[in-house]
Image (cartoon, rainbow, N blue to C red; front, side):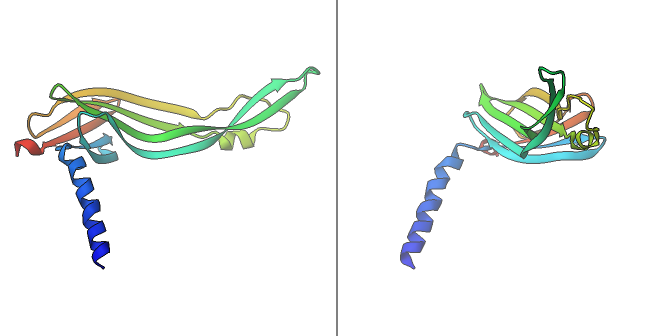
Length: 164
């Protein structure tokens, strides 16, 4: 019982110094047509880190090639893509540098299955990526709403616990 308690206290003591440097909290939400697409929060520091929300998934891909006799061969394979949001963040010269990347993947499985045996067509997943970079002041607690891509808005809320 005492050993468990001492191990638990030791583990908690190990995690405290790691969070002591991260005193700036970044909350954000991405909206499209007033609908929240994604939201999250992370602690930012001088070390470059990545926050992500999404899945790395394999998608079916169809490529076609002709053999020597002129007959078309269908080659099926899978490709792996990350679909979701990544926020790469770091503090540089009293500013938060943020890179937001939103990736959407449209699978082509239904179209591949709908092809007739004699039809040949190159069908790959459709990948749409929206990427923006921002520099925000971290000197005080602040809220900002900025454009993200052509039709979205990203809202930032920075809380600097050092200045509270």
